[in-house]
Image (cartoon, rainbow, N blue to C red; front, side, top):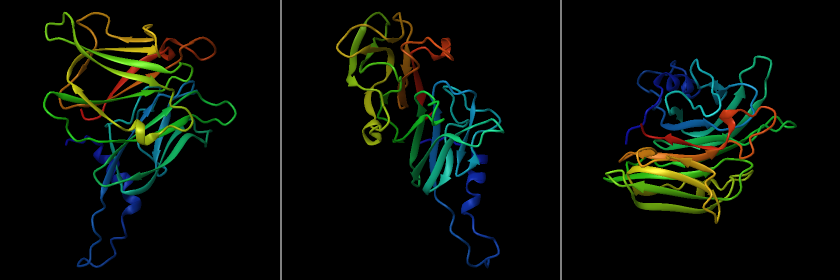
Length: 265
């Protein structure tokens, strides 16, 4: 199991857990145990890019976290136990977090945090969820995948993952996920954390209003295009953006689409 982390961030985030070195040398404190966390920002209509804070320590590097961005380094190492993770406005004049959540970090375990939905003009908040991500390497010829519905104005959807044959001339099989609702205010984080094992290969991804064959999202339009799911890799595919992409703050970037997160690059 390979976990890519930002080593400098581990050092800074563990400072709070290091006991004073004034103790006797023959009675050293045990080394802290490390869990891992990432944050992926799919929140809409934020006025600017933000910072990610872990226990009030900035976790992103020089780059701010904008729409569809994530912590540089894929994973940040944190001491096990209760940890606070937040997406904060990067404006110096703004003190409030756009979203925050307490997670329980465990040694050697990974948690993927997603911010999503539209900025609430009254509360100044977006929604946040924390999913356990099993980084055990999938078997030979397989990839592990899960799907999240993070588009706030899209209906319940069906998802079809259509695998293309080696000659890229036809579909060889498909995986269907039926009746996925928007994650909403109280997502079932346990259920959404589950990864499914599927054959690796080139896929077309179709997201459709449930019970229809009308594609709201299409990834791959010919047999030579699409999303390659690599053997041994672990992915989250998520729908994001607005189905009705009109009004203040909407741009081409906020139109309904699908993004893919690779958890073990």
